[in-house]
Image 1 (cartoon, rainbow, N blue to C red):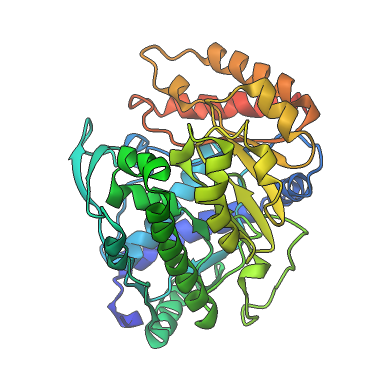
Image 2 (cartoon, one colour):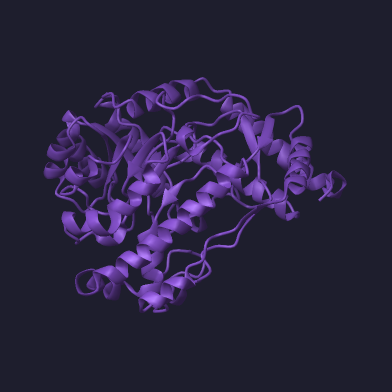
Length: 419
C-alpha cells in the first residue's frame, strides 16, 4: 500500500474524525480517570469505575454516527474504530480514557493451532455476531493431541513500516501516530479445547480419563507459550498499562508496571498485564479446577508483571486456590454468584471485578429503576471491597441503544455515591 492510493474523500473523512478524537483526548477528565484507574489497580478503595464493552454494535447506529464512509479497507478499519470511540464518549463513556495517540496496525500473521472448530450455528439476528453453536468433535483420544500445532507468527516489517507511514500521513498535524502491536495476553485454553473435544465429553473425561485431559492441556499450554515467545522475540509486544481493555475488567493503568515511554523501548511480557480464565469450569470443584486448569494457567500467568483471573465463571468458592497466582490483582465475579460469599472471600486483597447482569438490558419493557436498584444493592454489599463495574457480554438492547446510554448514566450516578 502506498500513500498515493488514498482518495481525497477517505483522507478528509479520517482527518475530520481525527480532529474530534484529538479534541476528546485533550479533555482534562482523561487525566482524572487515569488516576482513578491507577488507584483502583493499586487495590485502593475508590469510587467504583465503570467500564462498558462487548457492545452489540449492530444495534447502536443512530443518525449514521457509526456509518463507515471510506472505501479503502485499512481506512475503513481506522474509521470504524474512531467512530466507535467517539460514539462511546458521546453516549456511554463510563470512566473511559482516550489518549492522544493512534496506533497503526502491524502486518502480522498467525498460523493458529492447526485445528479449526467444526461448528453448527443457530442465529436469531443475522446482523448480530452473538450466536448459538454446537461443536462437532474432532479430538477423541491422546493421539489426536498431535492435531494441535505450535503457532507460527510472522511479521512483515516492511509492510508494517509502510502502514505506519500511511496512517501518519493521514493524521499529520492532528494527532500522534505510533506503530501498533500485541497488547492482549489472555490464556483461554479451555475455551479453545472444548470446541474440539465437546463440552460434556471432556468434562466427563476429567473423571474417567484424567491423563488424556492432561495430555491435551500440556500440548495446548506449550502452543500458547510458543506464540507468546514469538511475540516477544519479534518485538511485537506493546504495554497494556494504559487505556487498553487488557483484561476482562477495566483499564490497565497501574504503577505496578514500569512506564516505558519510548516507542523504541523493547517490551516483554513481564512489563504487561496477563490474564487467564476457565469459563467452562463453572460447576467444577476447586480441586479439579486446580488440577486441570490452574496448574497450566500458572505457566502463563507467571510470565507477566500483574495478572487478572476469570471472566464469566462464578469464582466465589475458588478464591482460595487463586491465592497462589503470581502478581494477581483482579478477580472477575460473574452475575451468577453468591454475592455475599464472594465479598467475604475476596476481601481487600484483590480488586473485585463485578460484572452486572446484562439481561436487564434485554427485557421486553425497559425499566431503568430496576437497574438503579440492582446496582445500588450490589455496591452496598461491596463497601468493604475494592470494586470495579464492568458491563460486558451485552447480546442485545432490543434495538434500543438509548437503554445502554441510560444504563451508563445510572451507573455513573450510583457509583459516585460510593466514592
